[in-house]
Amino acid sequence: MKFRFVIIGLLISVLLGCSARIEDYQSTEPALNLEEFFNGKLTAWGVFTDRSNLVKRRFKVSMVGTWKDGVGILDEDFYYDDGKVEKRIWTLTKVSENEYTGIADDVVGTAIGRTEGYALNWTYSLNLPVGDDVYELNFDDWMYLIDEKSLINIAEVTKFGFKVGEVTLFIQKE
Picture 1 (cartoon, helix red, strand yellow):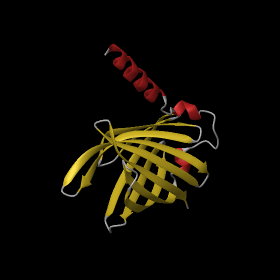
Picture 2 (cartoon, one colour):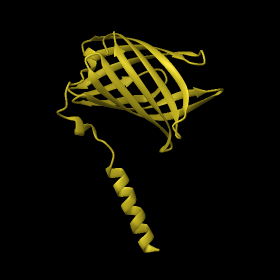
Picture 3 (tube, helix red, strand yellow):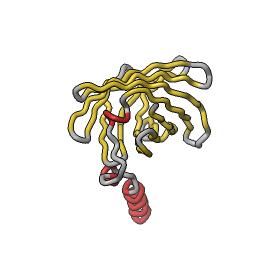
Picture 4 (cartoon, helix red, strand yellow):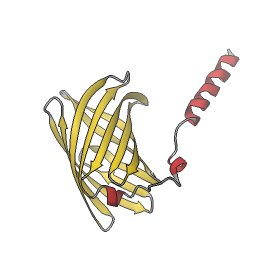
């Protein structure tokens, strides 16, 4: 019985040790500068997949970003494949050289983000309407700058620590 707990403990340690950390991208290039990339018009295309990787929703996002004195407004319009349209307006604040916070009407509390090299790790909870219900889901966003006009965003979505699905988004700067 004791042996089983030791094996389970080792497996959990290995799994937890396999997660990427933002520091892993420290000297990578091109460096992601949020004030430059999320400034002006952008268009994104994405999918939400459930935990079995089945595509549940497809969508397009039109965005406009503006920055002044370390504060950015990112105005997003989501157009879903089922005809539904949603709006989210982020207020982003540069806290330090590589750290940002963000708020939006459907974000619970404050989003926390950090850049290193070409990557951004952004974590937050979001109130997501599904039918007549609203679910608070946790997002672990990873954004990777490909070049000055292209970025890929992969977000793991969890509830109570369990994976619900994943959002994959390609963002193109106009």
